[in-house]
Image: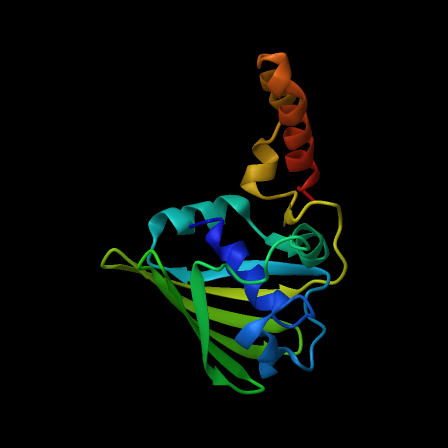
Length: 194
């Protein structure tokens, strides 16, 4: 679920760019705002999923660098072929999107423009007879501050507990074939704390 929130944001924010296809490319909500650029801060407003709430608290102010997300998505389809989005409401101030997936899961998102640089996303995810609800505010925070797609507040509990030397030492204990990749991932994780 934690990875799902940035994924939803990527789909929705990239909808306002030339990368989008199908019904998401026509969202009026994003026509007046340059989307798919810069750093977007994510703030979990509410959730009925305690694990999601704990994870959000540990990460602190989390940001998604859309410039990096766009680069990473260049060779992938804009929309998952296993899921079908349908735009239910499409105005300058709100967009309501329902996504139905072949695995039986679905999600419904109501996006509301709060200001020129702020959007509220109210989401319900349904799968296997269970529903999860969460509300996230996305605020444009200017230019990205690094090369990582996910960017975290350096004062967050997660970043304060991060010890780059200890993280790299863990990589040293891995087989040589996995060590370089582990070291690269650990350096990237440490760099994501801005």
